[in-house]
Length: 215
Image (cartoon, rainbow, N blue to C red; front, side):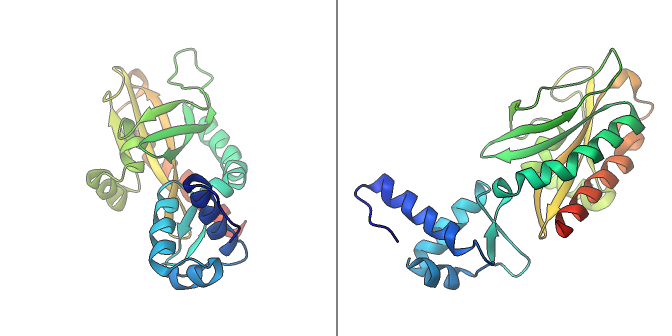
């Protein structure tokens, strides 16, 4: 690792060392320590913190690799045509949300063409666990149970009166990296957002997940 002359620089140096350690291939905590020159306990503790903020992620074997912040352009490229098709097939606003700490951020929004529509601008930042995608990204037990049972979870007028949404997880290497959300005025819902649109949203999220695995 490069020398550091302050605690802040020392932390940045350690973060950079771990990012360099997974640049070529995934690594266990022990291998991270070997590659970075950190102790195993320090490498493991810091890697877990970096995972929480998307700088690293873990695969099904528990190995660390680069996280969604370094695959975001790939994610957005995969998501945009799928969200556009989802908007066209449902007539409603389709969005992609990512978790950042205790918030969720809209990175893509393909707005409904209807005059009355539910929409938020790209870059919008909302606290967790507001809304269906917020519940999902916050890993609320009930939301995860909904996904296990139906493939989606929904929200009905919980954040904004008159609006509902249905969301499904985007997976990469077995880890949820984003949520596809369809935002709907309740005046156009026949049953519930999930009953009306859940299957389409879940299929869109799976298409994006499949594209990420082959990218």
